[in-house]
Image (cartoon, rainbow, N blue to C red):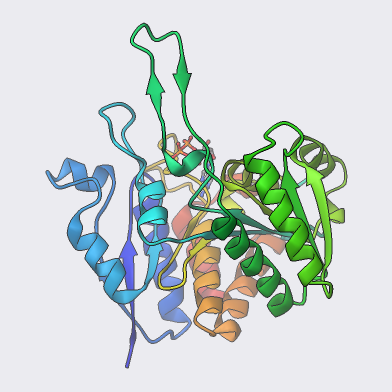
Length: 334
Ligand code: ATP
């Protein structure tokens, strides 16, 4: 029986990236049945909810979703759709790998770092958000729990073992954020004790940013809390040539949603110039998740070869071709 995948094309460059990605999945001969769903501005513009119930039902039913970037309108009291999805389906581990592809406009060679971002807690929990009436004071609450920290740490060590990784850095700011980051660090130290087969290190997040820029090859895997993970993973994307090369996976115990790290990129939407690798690489993570690693590797190798041979590359990769020509070049190699 074909595996059913919920596909949310999303906003901005999302639909063109999704179209390109479905083409390569079909060419790979994946036995998938795609069920399309709407969300974001695209849905709102059609008079529907920002995150319609039918979309949530489809994600619950199929358990696996491939999602283009979604824009949450600023103002109007809308809660971020991405944050809502992560919390609603308890997608507690956000996996964001970055790998150097030969031929990209990157500053470094041989980068291969997986960031695991805690995805449901910290400053993203949305608790205690308020602005005083005179707008002089704003506050919001950060919540970090033992359960939330332990499960993302366990996820990181399990993934390290599965991928043959040797080392995990826990990034924190426990010297200042003594309660929240302090709790996370304590749990990370305990996890380090319980996982002696993997080398465990810890680093204060500001130093970590400098170290990532100065000497990124010292890092293998990173695990950290929500906001730090958000920032660090964009920094890591910059190490390998930008957001066009950065995929992400949101994993829970029941549901998994695969997406590009970047947003809807309104500045380049509708111009056929976006690099579809981000979503294609997210689809490769989805294939890994479904134990279809051979097909995932085939896709990664095809993308790598297009970039290495500079065959029809998009502008962010130093080329002059469009999204559709890049996609054709990948398809030709499959
Ligand atoms: P959001 O608020 O949704 O994150 P944003 O515009 O702030 O949106 P992104 O959409 O992530 O941020 O885009 C950041 C920059 O990276 C933009 O200049 C965008 O054009 C570029 N960019 C993002 N994705 C791609 C891509 N797939 N290919 C090429 N450039 C991209």
